[in-house]
Length: 409
Image (cartoon, rainbow, N blue to C red):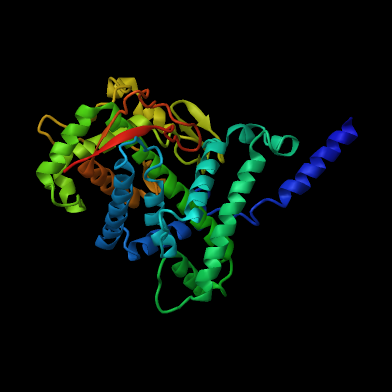
């Protein structure tokens, strides 16, 4: 019996070892120290140079939003309900891919659908704590399929191969004089630093960095927008008030833009409440204690992995009073000003705050306001109302639901 067991473990080890993404390095999400500081600083600088937080980035997002509206309008013209839980996926990913790789996909591109399926699958296999595999890592050898390990490896290998092909294409047309996107900038930095000892700019690090940004940046934003559409179906009064504010500030003949944002107080409050109530990111990215310390009477040894429950913060009854209720007014003051609550932290806090926060906030605003400015979302007759209980995983994703989209003249 023991001989058979050992042989099974060896076979599983050999099989899985051939399926692992080669050399999968740290990237920027699950690392710290000098490598993290250098890579994060480089990424932020390059993304800003490429238009993050500037007019060029906003225009890219507005173009994607217009194309999304055109696609949804074509679907709604049939009079049939439209699936909304993943309606934003392709547009959000395209905006991110333009920064990383300098191009976008057609919305009917089969490769795009395959990438989206891979991203969704990878986020549902585990949670931020690592799930069952993190608690009992030996299961990857004893039960690779049932534990989800083989599935995760297959998904990551597909993503790794796709990113590798993209980097190879960039290298074949690389110019050292100008940069088209983040991949170009990284390859140029590789050339400049290749003779330096302990250089962190390697091709494997580039692939891992792209994987981090590509997966985390697209999944969290598209899931939040999916929940935003869901809440508008469930709360038509909130939707009507947000649309009235858009009509008054933007006007019916224009598309919402960032310069309208300071006057769209209620719309901003709705987006904040969507992020708080849906809890798309229930647990912040893992931190590591750099030294032994005391916290609220507990000793935390050096090297301990720390997980912050954002869900517990956003659903704390002592602070919010009625956290289970979807109520955007909690972020509006008596003077009709937006309230910046210290307990609202969907992007985390401190040095490890989300790298893509600026892009995510802009994407949420542009796609959500453009959707509400063009359509009224309502519950299809004969169908049960959508559930606010999403699928578990690294992030929480909305369950499939449909809405009737009524064009606003």
